[in-house]
Image (cartoon, rainbow, N blue to C red):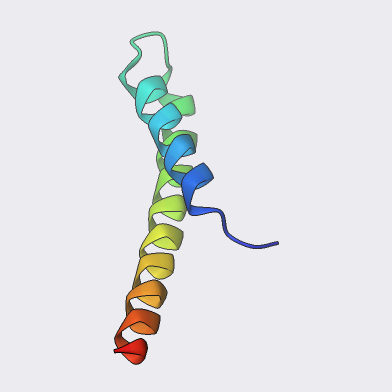
Length: 58
């Protein structure tokens, strides 16, 4: 499966809303924070790879 940067950003925005919601319990927050860390890592890798590809083109 290929990584979809746009969908990852959308999911991070959803997670941010849920974490900010006072109705979200601590157990859920742990789950959302772990998922967000994973998504952020993947986004950084994607951007790093894209930057390297652009540098090679120049």
